[in-house]
Length: 116
Length: 114
Image 1 (cartoon, each protein chain N blue to C red):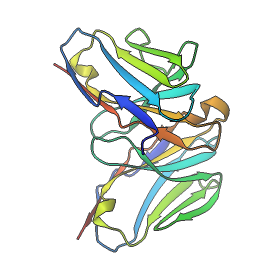
Image 2: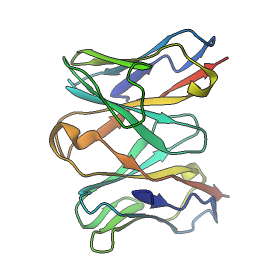
Image 3: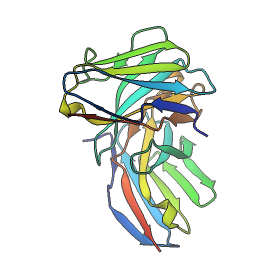
């Protein structure tokens, strides 16, 4: 069964509003989680590294004020897309690993965001 | 030049065929190599994981890594229609908590027809 869960799977929001996506590790603690974005027919692009108890680390070109990441517990990271616009419509996926190097990296089922 | 190059296909094969999927990369620091399968509108599912160079076999799947050539492959034997999906290669260079930072190829769309 799934070891990393995302919610919601689908969300439609109006332009200008904010949307929160949750990523949970179900049976293990994850001090680090990762957020990816995937546009249609494109590959996954790393957006940011979510660190439990500290600030997220964003990849170059990703607006940290637009994509707010909070990792308040060892099993939950949230991504909030603020003031969403149609160009933010995408598939957002999180991942987590049970441990350090060499351990399996699990991905969530992803969250489809459509901004209208 | 992208760090990881993967032929996007699409690739169409008859059931029972051997499928070969490949990726090349430019970053010599990559140490961990993975293949994921992704069905439409779903999260990636890990198929194979290899550390450094070598071969690994799991059922109908064989992963090969040639670090000297910066080239990795995934072979699928006796392909089935249920193998139809997008296959993504992924790589990581770092250890510790940064281990999970993956660089993906573009993905190859595979269709296995009966």
